Image 1 (spheres, helix red, strand yellow):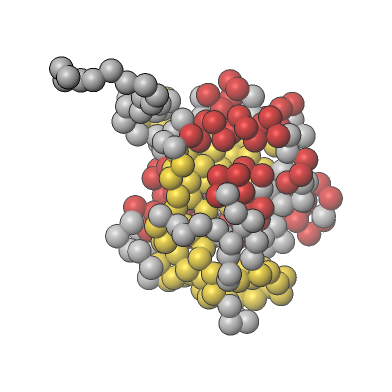
Image 2 (tube, one colour):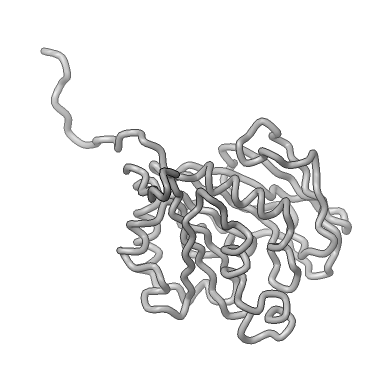
Length: 249
């Protein structure tokens, strides 16, 4: 798949769709106070740059905001979900899955580890330990040469976050970029990459809805770097099936 990047003023723009359930923000006053326009809107504002063309989509829109037209014009899809994983229609999951296999990048955030699309792509249960105690999280860069780590310090801290702990039931990542330590003692593989078909996938752990995590400069830098890393490349789509010889037999 050729990248679908939009040209604006001579700059190649990565077309990004940020998907969010947008339920917590409507039902929980604490979350609404932190993200009054929704997590998706906060991410869009925080990630706006001269090379990202960002739109948003939410669960309650027609086709969850992920029509064929939207997905076919998306280079990288960012996914945040929690309350309503089961409410995402299976045909939409299949549609997203096919786009990833064809080369669309996918960034899965926080509790999106339990989303239908992430579990389908991983082929595992994707379960983990968790605790809501608002404890400190220290995120260590364990692969500083990776593009997703560009511009990050050796480690950074979030004053309050939900704990996720090992064992995280995922396949061994292609690359491990970030590891978290929590005040309660647990550790977690917080930044993992995978390749499925022609698509690149990045899972990034922080982002519980009751904490202002998506305003943190380093968190936004990781997500922005992840989007640029996951954007489609210009490589030719593989041709499979019965093949004629290239040389005379």
